[in-house]
Image 1 (cartoon, rainbow, N blue to C red):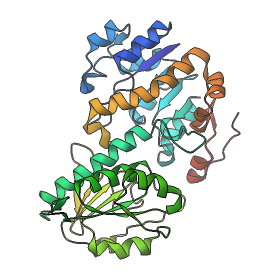
Image 2: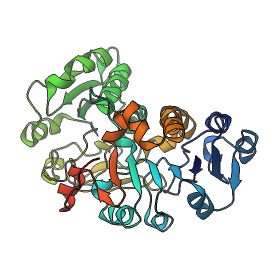
Image 3: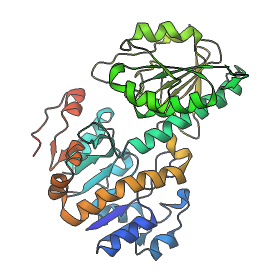
Image 4: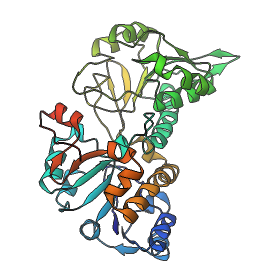
Length: 369
């Protein structure tokens, strides 16, 4: 199979979907890898390393997309990239189609088969292509909150940690999933007082207790009133909840922000505009923060890109077995062997298969083959 690895073009993005070691694995199996020049530079992988591994280094994005039967990416395609879609293409990478009707239009119009990395899910609900990035994002969220609590523009002057065994900051974590557990472990490890809320607390209790035994999980399901009652005592909020665009409910409203301390910090890992945090708007690594109601907001939807070497190794390592399997056996046989891939199907042969995306965008879903 011909596999394309384009350079990521999202602002500040330095990750790459396949490393030179991954290319070597694919080429030894008889596949052909087309890697865009500079695709791995931000993660420390030079073109020469890809060429030595057997890749064909291509000078343009157009050449990579046109050559690939399967294109492996990290971040979702931008509008400029949709012009490079072609019939019969298999796209494997993050997609987040529910927020992007224009992307769904392009995928359907070109007959692209889309495997959304964030939706690939095992029977127990674990998402093997999302978990590594969520773990990194959770830890980064705590480090980011610590930085902005101590530095302008908020100038709260609060250390996220402990002094003489006493916590100096209270961190509220929304969501006890992978992001929340990772953040709770990091914040607790620094000595902060940590409160976690979740819409299904019993579902996350056991894993959270293993990751962060010092964190306090609220027993009742999280609702706006419960969350906002905590806000006057909170120094930092970390949101690890994916927004449900169908319900449109906010857990932290603008009015709630007015109850918070001046200089408090919100780190929204989900970054959905008007999502769980009403005041969120997506920013970039080059311009990551803004202040609303005296509260510093850090809302960067590709946070792991700030540590590209670590993130690339984690993501590419998780992605490669699926690329190998699809390349060796074809998509249908790959989904039969690894059923979690089927959960990631968004579109196939011009048909929208993801019922959640269809509901959110008012479309008619097809029937999953």
